[in-house]
View (tube, rainbow, N blue to C red):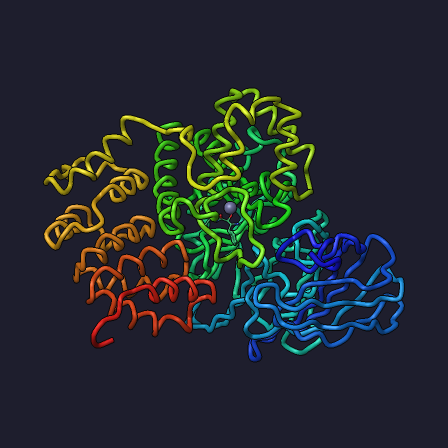
Length: 601
Ligand code: BES
Ligand code: ZN
């Protein structure tokens, strides 16, 4: 490459490793719901006096001014807009350690979703939330947006009353704002984090104590249900500490977002963000909390150097999540979780094609938007690779290895190759024995993938597969199923069960009326794929309110099978699109674009 590119280690960032590194970030943000903008000031402190050029990332930002710590104006130039990376901001500081930038975000900032009051539980106040992973922090503030550079941060956020702000940091109190009718919330994050873990949410929020180090925040209308759902959080943290070592982040608080949140959960440190679709009433979906909590070790302490090594983050976290699940609920429940994950993995492999380079663990993403590369592969193939290492080394030895690994790399961001080097040093020969090269650098799932079996699981799969031959579970059997068992059964059904099949399932299992979104969406996928009209109204309702991409993709895909559901999908999408998060909109649109043409659409 050109000399200018040589020092660029992250294909998704302009940050240059030869330049001083940002170590600390000081944010002053004023949230303007009318303009859907944040007026910001970002002060970056570097590890060495910066004698420009010093390159930052930005996306859809308006940079208004830059000054040094002594108040001297700092020359800067904003580069041309690049489709994935955004705009490079090149500073030319006069040998100072700190640069302060004044800027404004855009209403279209990909990190931010601005919700109207109708999109919230309370219906009376607007809501704002951020989602910075993988590369959207640059649209919230100008900074070197690569996990290779960790920063500590502090922030002051001015919001209109009666709203409050939460961040991925410790709360440091509040005070009246400079403008009438506003309040300022202060935060401090003393531990260095990759920029993708910056997070902010603003809304009509209240909180409830769950345990000595946990609270849940939510809109008042949702708070009771949330407190009940997540009441066992402290027990989960304590179990995780037994497995992975002390919890290092002080508090573990959670925020329940409005339903347009595009993910199940996001491991923002000290403030996990969660979809309200987890509020099933019976704590059956808290494996998402286990997953986000597990990131406190595998991810937030040791993360990927860039998105080409994303499996190091998510693969280890799914492995840790399932270890935690096993400790809490036993092996039988864990086998079912692996089975559900296997289904997701198969779907991703099919979507990309089994020989697609996107099914490698170590990916090559220059020129690829990491949001487009997102799939279950780094999660489920990654976790299977980690489990293979665990089984081959033996659990006791592997647990010692994990402790060493986290001690060695804590608060850093590493590559696949750094991981391999460490593995070879600690457990010589193991990588070769499991054919790590094939796992990491080749597409598809290697033949030595671990299998997760139990009689219970095999019986459920056989029962689902027997549906086409007329096999039906007894009412008493169905009544005894856990959420996970119900899911494994539904996932084993044929993708089209016919009108009568659907009617039987709905009557016997009460599926359309279910409030558990995992079960409901699995059912609606079958119903939509079978052109089952009685489920259309519920399907419409889910598509209009829920923005979780994990649900939108299979639902819109299943609706592509029949002309009637294709028409419904196009109509619902037209209505829902303005309310979807930009990511959800893109996923739904990409699925609908692949539909065949229909006569009158
Ligand atoms: N960090 C991810 C979410 C994410 C990944 C956001 C990449 C943006 C880019 C989070 O930890 C996650 O994996 N969430 C899952 C939970 C599941 C695996 C239990 C989700 O949202 O479904
Ligand atoms: Zn995760």
